[in-house]
Length: 591
Image: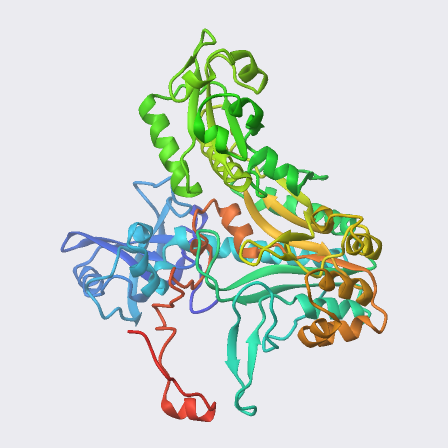
């Protein structure tokens, strides 16, 4: 007997017929047939069991209990006359002797039907999340999350990594997103920050002499929500390795993730090592994004020179023109127009289009501007029966629009997307620097603490004007799966001299590095090992494995899109006494 019961609601089978048992759970439903016959369904964490009341007293007892009350039922198991092959317990039922209410549901009306909660408005689901989670379809995602985390933890330990927890209250640092600040009661006017990531701490662990670190790390960033990003907090498989480089990190991830994806995913096929590697600039030119979905076989083609030879003004004025050729695209004009409109919603501009009919003639869209250029278009991938979507504008705009068009075409046209698989790739060789859109000055492109490819020597050459800083690349990499960025990582810049020189390139000096990152800079001055790491997002991994479009579906108690916990009422006002203790005055609020 365990936890007030002899069996769970998913445990009883035909071999238990004749046994006296006790089950506990929630009263999911009662169907009264007559005054002397009623069928009740009891649900617990594990499943459901049917109970058949066959006396007036027992029928009245069940009718008096409101749905979703917790109950205890004692009775005898028997074989069902009308079996339900869809249920593990569908061959049996319980004839009750007693039913006891353990926790009464005080409401006759529920905010939604439990087994159909996913059809309810999301705001209501989040407000009553504890009811939403009773739905087995919702609960299974949380169970999946638990199993995936356990598998990741086991795999990392098997690879010799130590699980070490790092501080939650730390110092604010410029990591690219807004911090959540915590006022320090004993230090008026000063604040802790919740960590955006354990980045500095895990690098300090490497400097401290630990060889392999990991944790399922909570991270906090005051960012707006997206379909694949929860506001406020998220979790990542954070890892770092000393005396290691890019290939060492790749080897661990390529060994850890495919078995987890193949075992727990809705698809049982996952990329096997080595994962495909694509240079950052090549990814933009070939797929229009640094997060390509390699299940799609379409690629972008550069048609800038051809487009500029036409007399179509938007092409002549564009810095870049990209073509997405797609064979077998038997779409109607109405479908093409809708597809182009959908691309515009995501990309910010509408693509042009042209079709090559079965005879090889160009028809529709901007076809008239390419008259006589049929052979040139065929060399770019167009073929009889093809549809081509064309994006023009600045290089960034053309790539972005074409990239969105590629993804939508791949999903819309049969035969171009091998959907039921997990396709991984590494995006490598990120630019170290870029020209800032607002400042017009040289800035770090991504992570300022990545090791430049070429080390100190390449930075010194750039300083002398021998190398264009925009041609310097970093040992920085992203892990992408099915068009979703799972993680960023890098070989770290562990040498204080190289670090200072990199910051000098963007107009900052040694004093700035020391003031912004004092612990890490000073630690590196005591002899730091070369080290590298990565941190795949647990939430995004589970979202992919569950096949969910929204990350909120795999988080037990998620915030809404406005970073509110409507169930707990957070964020909330606090008492004046609490503000006084923290030396905080609220000077104005927006209604």
